[in-house]
Image (cartoon, rainbow, N blue to C red):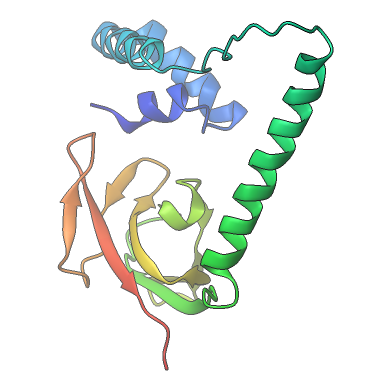
Length: 184
């Protein structure tokens, strides 16, 4: 399947890309059918999500008690959550980021971009390195495991050829898996 459909559903396309998408839907019946099928799947997935929990109902003998209990309960819940976060993460959890340089050699392309979990899958344009055919970008990445892909000439997605750890994405392509660790 074309990744452009997913980017459209997730509202991750620019206005120019949305225009191209709509034109392609009108010109290519198979693309239109794939788009509608994925939209129907997305509707089904979203319809199964519970977006609110019903409020607890209880009866009291006095109408004065209920208006007091709700704010007190909310305050106590918020305080408990705040204290839990405080004691679990401070001062023991210190988030660090690491400079990581991404490089790809593709002299045959006019544009290279990178997208991944560290960019919330938004595309970031890479810099051409002279006329060498190399493209690069240095990003600050938090520690942990990150998935990413290169996008060449706005549509071809490829995994990083220097990273052997990969996984299939939802569109038949591959994402590279990068483990970022701080240097102690």
